[in-house]
Amino acid sequence: MLRAITRTAISIRPVVTLDKATLDRMWALYAPHHNMTRSEFEDKLATLDEVALFIRRKDRALIGFCGLRHLVVRPATGRPVATFYMGLTYLEPEFRSSGLTQWMVVRRVLGPLLSPRFGRVYFWCDCLTYRPYLAMARNLGEYYPCPTRATSDEVLEVITTLGKTYYGDCFDEQFGTVRKPLRRINEHEAHVSAADVEDPDISFYLERNPGYDRGDGLIAICPMGVRNLAHLFRRQLRKGLFASPKQPAPQLQFSREVAPAGRSVAAV
Image 1 (cartoon, rainbow, N blue to C red):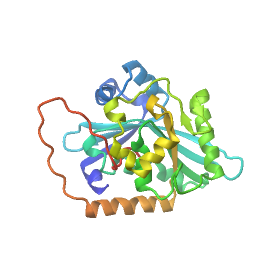
Image 2: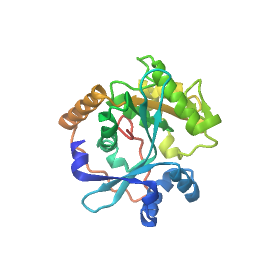
Image 3: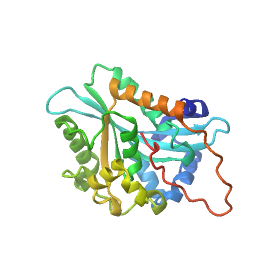
């Protein structure tokens, strides 16, 4: 994460402030990997509140972005909770293991975490591939759905409220998934290899999202409290201390295929 902070900058902007040049750069990154038209992309953007732009410091190049949406949910019991959504996301492969998205999440939730208005703060996403889910499983101590921890009544209520609010009849309350009319992620990003299936977290994701092959998403959520943030920072510190030096990638002359992020962090 420290490496990401020094190499990159994050600019969180209201969607309505994005100019055409920025939208063009975002679309140039996103289009090759998704089954979506430019007008559909902009329509999706319009449903969001903010966009986090990830910028490489040395040349100010846009290397990725993440859409954000926030909603206050009032459970039947307890205090209101603040929820933040992360979606419409793309990050260049070389930055997917850097902790960049985790740092953005921490920045965004600090204000609500310190506010006396909220009992808890949740971050959530509609995981169209296993990578956002794996980011939670690899970096957080508490996340849902989880193979080793029962989902609390409050979390179930929050997931149901988010699903019905944003997805209506496309939300499947039984599985906590969102039915998609078509696969939005192209094959080279959505592919799950035989080795991937051997990973217990990826296998659990596929089990909980039975419509994955047709493009459905799994709603995954995590509380952003002190324990989870401490767990995240410890995880990032260990990665920084013990990570092996990266080898330079070979210079291939044919068209590049984006490799899956495997067990690295892609989104949260």
